[in-house]
Amino acid sequence: MATPEAAKELGNAAFRNGDMKGAIEWFTKAIDLDLDSSNPSGKAHTFYSNRAAAYSKLDQHAEALGDAEKCVALKPDWGKGYSRQGLALIRLGRYKEARDAYKTGMQKDPQNLELQNGFNEANRLSSAGSVNLGQFQQYANANPSQALQLALRGLIVLHAILYLIPFFGRGFSFTRYRHLLFLAMANYILALYKTHGMVKFNMQYLAMVMRDPTSHYIFLCGLLLIARPNIIAICPILIIELVQFGSVLSEILPSASPTLAASIQGSLDSVMPRAIPQWGVLSRVQRVTLVQTKGVELSAMFEVGYGVLLVLEMVTPMRNILATVMYWQFLQMRYMLEEGGAQNVRNAFSIVDTKISSFVGHPYCPSIIGKAYGWIRGWMANMTKLPAPGERPKPKCTIM
Image (cartoon, rainbow, N blue to C red):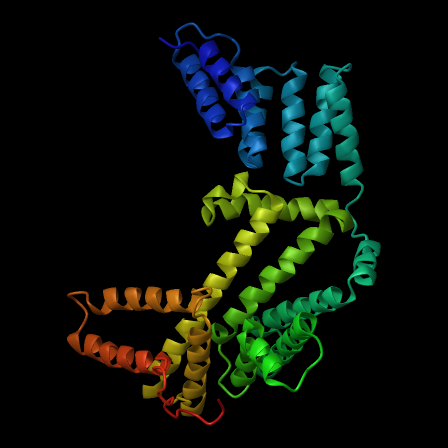
């Protein structure tokens, strides 16, 4: 029969080999065996301490803090427990609490250098709570175009908030909606300039620009300016810009404001594993790359979803025939230019169709709704259908 100490040693071996999940399982086993034993080992505090260390390696700092607090409760005179507690609090951005934890530990174990170093670090971070604007100025001087894009994206996010929460009435809110689209267009034009240089009036340059998804969003912004304001319509823009805004801030903020950066990181570490299970074991670069990929996929879902919404609005007084036809041309262009590349819009069509088909195919759903969707589905397929080789495209709208 396994003993708590044997399970702990297996956990230590897994920890040394970099298998943090395996280490957590063995330390948990040690804790359970010790709790179930009629003769406790008296070393439960070390099991919790070791598991806290493994959690910290996986950036699961809330769990690490919980184990560190149990460790301190079981053995209040052991300095290692306070060290674990202070580290978890630092990683969660709770610097003043971390400083207090280290201070208490130093009172229990005055010669512990780990506690002294941790206290100094927590003290430094707790006094560095203000934002260092010099870091932003340094970034702007080194990367002027990126800094301009960062400012534009910040304004886009601000205008989105003012549109969604109408502090000053509907008229002001709708003006913010239009300004958001103009800001997004300016940002996309700047992005095209950075990628392709000055405008060249030749077919090669035009072909390059048309294949760039950024140019598609310039067309989308112009299209949304003639359509009725709708939160779903601007979600594709907001998602992409918010992800890009966040990825740049993640580079600057740790130097400009360590307190704020750690606080935001702690919040993300507690939320993101629900959407991305492997979040805890990814590096910062891997996280940014994965979030950008997920953002593009989610943006495509909203693009297709808004197209379906426009079709459904055709049977209501809110219909806008011109906007609907032009938007579906935009989707056709996106669909066509994905040939041989990323399949985000195509995958989004498939996912949306599957979800709606499962709903209209339900036994309790009236058959007329299923027939109506069948007609809409055929119409949408026709709108995104690509012409066969040698076939002239069907005229839909002279804008394209």
